[in-house]
Structure formats: C-alpha cells, structure tokens
Image (cartoon, rainbow, N blue to C red; front, top):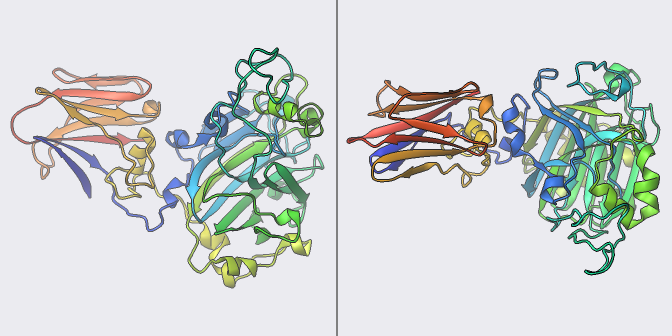
Length: 480
C-alpha cells in the first residue's frame, strides 16, 4: 500500500509496507539493527539541562557488536538525590517492557570495545554498584539544572542570592526523585554477580540486592533478561538469567507493608528506559557525602573521569521491547503472583493467572523498519530518519512546499543521512511502473543533474524541481 498526498498538480508518494500494529507501543521498541534509531531516544542529562554526559560510550549497531546498543558509564550513581544515566522513551499508561543484555567488565586498563587495544575481562565488575537495567522515572519540571554561572568547587545549596558571592541559578530542587529500577551486575559485593532493586519516593531510596537464581557459571551469569509490567498503580518486576526460568522479583503498590515495595509518586506518563552506573567506591564519600544536597547536586552536573575514578561496566543490550499488557492482566492478578522478595528465594513465574500473559508471552519483537506501525503512510524507517514517532499517526514529517514555478521537498532528519541511501523519483502516473530517478544521495554525496537541485545540512535535506504541466508524482525511497 502506498500513501499519496496531493499538492495541486504534484504528488509526493511515500512507499511503505502498511502493516497496522494492533499494539500502539510496539513501534517504540528497538532491536538495535541500525544506528538510525539512536536519535529516537531521549537523554535525561539533555532533557533537564545538566550539561554532563555521564555515558562514556553509547553506540548503536557498531561493527564490534552488531545488533546491540552498547552502554558504558563514567563513575556515577542513582541514589536519593544523585542522578545518573538514563536513556528513555516517554510512555503514557500501562505497559510491558522487556530487555535482554549481556553485562561485562571493562577491558584491561579500563579500555572500551571501540578501542583497538580492547581485551575483554571475564567475570562480574570489580567495583561496587556497577549494574545495568530497566529504569522507570516520573518526569520532573526541570530544564536548566546545571548551575549558571558554574561555581568553583562544591556549590553551596541552596544557591546564594543574586549579588552574593557564589550566586548561581538552577531549577533543580532536592527530594523530588521518584523512580524504580531492576538492574544486574555487581551490587554491594564487588566481583560477585548480583541483581539490585531500588524504589525511590520523593528522594528517599530503598534498595536491596541478592544472588537468588543467578547462575554459578560465569558464561551464563552475564546474560540477563529483565521485564517490568505496569497496570494502574501496580508494577511487577521480573528477571530471567541466561535461558533459565522467569523469576518474579517484586511487586510495588501505593500502600505496602514494607518500603521495599513502595510504588513511587508516579503519574500516568513516565520516562521508561535503561540505565547504567558504576564505581560507588570512588565517589560516595565526596558526592553522596551522607546526603548533603550540595555534594549530590555537584555529582549530577559533573562528568567523573580521571585517575581517581575506576568505572568497570559495559552493557551490550540485545533488544528493548514494548507492548500493552493483555487485558487479562489486572492489578488483582498481579497481586496473586508469588514473589522472590517475599519468599527470600528464586520464585518462578507461574503458568497460570497473570503468568500466562507475562515472561516470554509478553516479549514481542519491535516491528521491522519497513513496516508502517501507526498506519500514517510513513514507514518506520523514514520516521526514524526524520525523528517522528512511529507509534503516533499525528507525528509525521511535513515536507512539501511550492511557489509559482518550483516544487520543494524538505526532509527533516536526525543527522543520519550517511546511514541510508535516498532516491528521489518521478513519474507521470501512479499506475506506471516507470519511475525515473532524479537524484540519489549516498554517504559519498549527491548524484543529480540540472534542472534539479539538492542539498543537505545537519538538520534537513532540500530537493527542488521545476513544476511542469500535467500530473506529476514524486516519491522518496530510503534504503538502510
């Protein structure tokens, strides 16, 4: 099926496989088969204006790990008012998120896999609280968090008044963090495979970690699949080590009997994504400092690297998949699930009740890039290229304009043109199989002849052609 959009005597045609998905969230997943999807992810340090990229490595589908997203953090942490790495999609309503990853140490001498000298070290990370996993957070009304002007040393908090020594501005305030995560790596015991769970309500964090169900064999232990389901004001977290059974880790509700099951102060819309953090040993005394707000604030806008820090974590994420929960999953059926946390042992997902609709039964791959998941006539590939939302038919590129003599196609993009080949083609009939290529763009540049003109910069592509009499049809073909 093709999408046509008339503009007087000219038409633009997007060729896309129209495959309407029954699930409106699946298109927000990522199989990491191309770098094109990287700009569709949001970064918290950018969203809130922290100006501190705490990820030392963030690659999509690199040659050294095809089909993966690779994350390696600088020394950083999430605890109380400490803010670490978060890459995310914004999700409204109920969801199931599933991700599989391999967690490893950094290479010898702290090298990363994009370094030609990289030599992988086996075993769990050697620094305390070095983990990666699913992270869900309530958005905060923050956009200019970094201190302006930047003060020297540890800032006084709250900021001194204007005109006073050390004055700066920020819209960050303490005691506002609400998040929940399930992660894997090493927690309080370096050189030991462990999972960690943390729930934080208005800046108060409650955590625990353990080894229940983690394989003894190192080659198996480094692989983990994590799943989180939200239905109403209930969240359940699960994990699966290597190819073992699904373990129901914990459940979070608004009024639990213990703080380890506290549902954070969440709204309907959440930042749902992935985190990595590492090396609590190197930064806790200075940047947590027994809960001092000024020290934690400094951690949040700082990139902690250099000889005094020893980060030790790499996460190779295989996939990140969304879907809506089956209607049979309710807060009541989630409440009936047995929990590893309450049983103090690995507790498997049952085959009945909510268990019949979770685990592997709620792990559908993200749609192919050739699909048109929201049925708006624009393929997921083009939506990735242009930065629009493949799960929202109202979000689509607006690319046509004309004057008395010329037709101009303006294609916004996310600085990924070199990852695809584009062809702009023309025909005088939609029924014709005879399409003429007017311009081609590859990573080597444009191939085009007069009277057509084409150019591009870091944000958009422009193609201009003279209008001619009669019916004319144009299409843009995008090939990864």
